[in-house]
Amino acid sequence: MTALDLVIRAERVVSAAGEVGRVIGVKDGTIVAIEPLDSDLTGSVVVELAVDEVLMPGLVDAHVHVNEPGRTEWEGFATATRAAAAGGVTTIVDMPLNSIPPTCDVASLDLKRKAAEGQCFVDVGFWGGAIPGNVAELRPLYDAGVLGFKCFLLHSGVEEFPHLDPDQLEAAMRELRAFDGLMIVHAEDTHAIDHAPSAHGETYDVFLHSRPRGAENLAVAQVIELARWTGCRVHILHVSSSDVLPMLASARRDGIAITAETCPHYLTFSAEEIPDGATEFKCCPPIREAANRELLWEGLRDGVIEMVVSDHSPATADLKCLDTGDFGVAWGGISSLQVGLSAMWTQARRRDCTLVDVARWMCEAPARHAGLRRKGLVEIGYDADFAVFAPDDAFVVDAARLHHKNAFTPYADRPLAGVVRSTWLRGRRIDTTERGRPSGRLLTRGGA
Image (cartoon, rainbow, N blue to C red; front, side):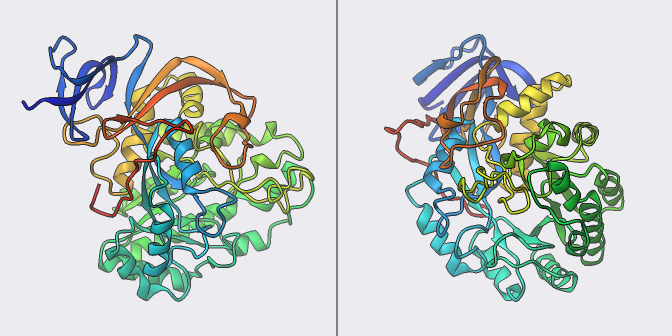
């Protein structure tokens, strides 16, 4: 074997074989050898992990709102990807909104890629957008390298990214089916939301009733039937209602190509514990009751929900109405990109889940979902993307020390289990300090 660039020895490696002792050899950014722990494999750089450290695949977060260009005061590529790296995430996929312009045609994709160039500490892929009137843009965007297409079934929160009505959704899905594109859907029914009580004031329970489970349930049912008619591959974003789990399972038994995700905040928090006026917890669909949360955990363990992603959707303090605490007008989005792994591990280990489970949900499944064939596993031929994680260590979240552009999060002052001690991208340790230099790549469909 030619000389290796990097060798990592670890008593605990999360791999396809489970959690085992292994020696990992890296050449030109790729894993080229996986040997037993007593192997004499050596390289230009040899790293011996401490006995309390686990080598995990780098996380793939397939649901991140970076917002640059256009709303870079909310979040930008430099801050988002530095936060990702600090949290063990080596690849993110950027949503087509809330940047201006949204990524709904090739020219807008080019603008976003130019904005990202040279700023990214981790690898970045891009979703395209499906909005009214852009069916003709979907194939060109696909050919330009987007990983799939996002749509809303109700107002997105920004005027430049309007939602699809049922006929428009069907037309877009038929177009995607022609080239096997993937539609990812924010599934809340606009009519159900319009007829729900309005959200106003500081009481979380009022906000919760303004986004009822029924709105999510109706929308998921509609997407399932349209997928049945059109044959389009579909994915349900940020599942918050446990009611949809039997529908998803039934659809898969019928042969419908449908997947689903949820987020750490739905698996961590509960509606009962959210204080009045705590708008940092507002997201859409909302965090629901504790009993619902436990059913989501069952769906995750059973494989009905395949993956966990952040839906990192930050905004400025004024838009979150942190001063007034008005849930009715506050921006709906959770800032959590940097703490997702620790938040998930904190909850997972309480439910007798393992790091192998967490890696499947946060590394392997999101990579497969986004079509990133060299990401998400510690396997020969994959990119040498790693998170060095100390699962028995702990910390208290200090929002001021997070790398997100706007330093607030519902995880502030919360004790979490597990510390990311280092993150490696293609065999090189990422420096997330101010001295660090971005080395992330911009990914295209089929190229990673």
